[in-house]
Amino acid sequence: MKPIERTLFLIAVTLAASLACYTTTAPPLYEPETFPENQPTVDQNITPVIVVSTVAVQSAPAEATLLYISGTTHIESKPQTWPDVDAFLAFLQQVTALGMKWSIGADVGWLEGEPRAAELIQASEALGVQWDIHTHNMNDRAKTAYLIRQYGGHPTSVYSGFLINELEKFLPPDLYLGVSWTPQVLWGAVACPGHRPGCDEQSAGLWSPLSGNDYLTHNPNGNIVHAGGGTHQLDDGRALAQAIANGQYSYPIISFTLMVAPTTLQIVESGDGLPEITAFVSEMKEYSFVRWATIEETAQAWVEAGSVPSRIEMEQKK
Image (cartoon, rainbow, N blue to C red):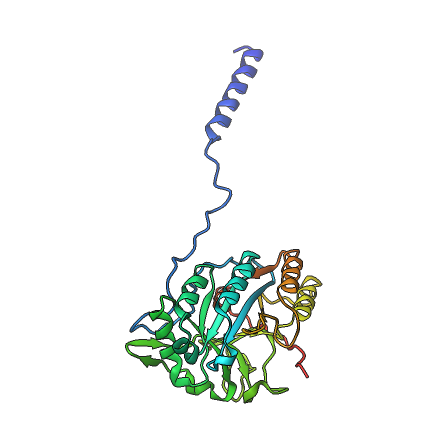
């Protein structure tokens, strides 16, 4: 074989080998996201054993600190504290249209006494609002869950408002007319009744309380989640977001809750209403790490992110 023929032969062999190694099927750039099916949190004759959300939440990127912000309102049993149904529903329509997620804690007196309770529950759930258990009598917990279900709602596993020293008393399941209810998420802990100065636990962030006597210590083997609401004030939410942006915290999940009074529809202990809340939401949307979620969804996200305790003490109101 002549030298030039030998060279051409080698080039042809090399090209054939290269083509044999080439494939036109590229690996996918990403896997499609999957979400759990929507399931009611509390069902008849079933006691929840893990935190389950009725709405899919956004997963946390690896090594990121996310701030989960929720909104809440408590409706007590005293009629003078009940919201105007039309005004409250209009408020919920406006805040959810902004992208917020709302959790309502209802006591048994309102559920039994408000003739439009079923209307509000169903209309608000259609907006993505969730209904938590808020009772001043522990024996009414399952009854409250039962009534919410009877009105077409889906009670969550959130026990919203309680005395810290009664922790061990309300952990066992409660039963009412075939409905079994067990708290999985705690929100609104108080050290003494009446919301007197120094009574409310106002930490932001999440943890599993060790006991009623050592509530602020995280129990790594705990099976109940405290979702801290902080001070509920807009300016404190702003400060917390800025601190995260400045790299002050490295927890995977931090929680904060705005709380609105049912009669005034303003942030508790302030005059901040819908215009101020709207401005706050607009500011928070500038932070890529802010997520809007209900209280139960926040607890679920924390568990899915590894249950890393993130309690952040905030100043008590005077």
